Amino acid sequence: MNKVPMTVVGADQLRKELDHLKFERRPQITEAIAEARELGDLKENAEYHAAREEQGICEARIRDIEGKLSNAQIIDVTKMENTGKIIFGTTVTILNIDTDEEMTYRIVGDDEANIKENLISVNSPIARGLIGKSEGDEVGINTPGGLTDFEVVEVQYI
Image 1 (cartoon, rainbow, N blue to C red):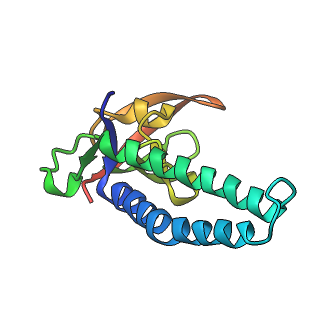
Image 2 (cartoon, rainbow, N blue to C red):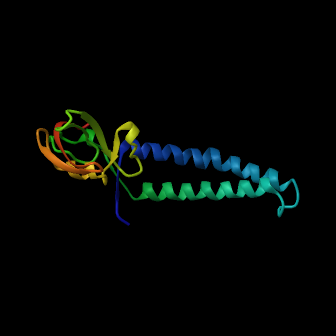
Image 3 (spheres, rainbow, N blue to C red):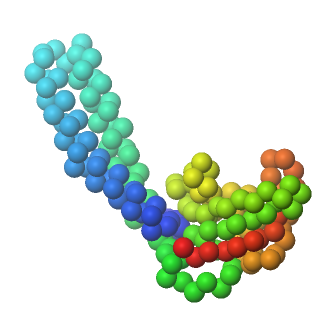
């Protein structure tokens, strides 16, 4: 399987979620199943079936996270020399040339992307248009509103 780029923060968040699922959530579900078994007939036991379904969801998420972490290529831009080029993990401030609106985004992996926190996926149209550019460069990016021209104001390796 191909390596998936991930920031240090993203990998830490996945590890925390994995620990929570394995060492807190899984034992709670196992206990709920045991309690539901004691209630009798399993065919008509809604608590038992709900707990088993929750167990399946939890185990699937554990496998998903373990798979992602095993295929992760963790990239720490803070340990790289700031060449001014936009790469995975950099924080980029861009200026919409038409509206004079300035935006700051951090380019992250697909699982970490959250537009509300200004974290955009490396596979998003904006990130794909910015990768490889430097401060002062102008770039036209196809956005949902059509072709938009941006100027790269600042590139930070933080």
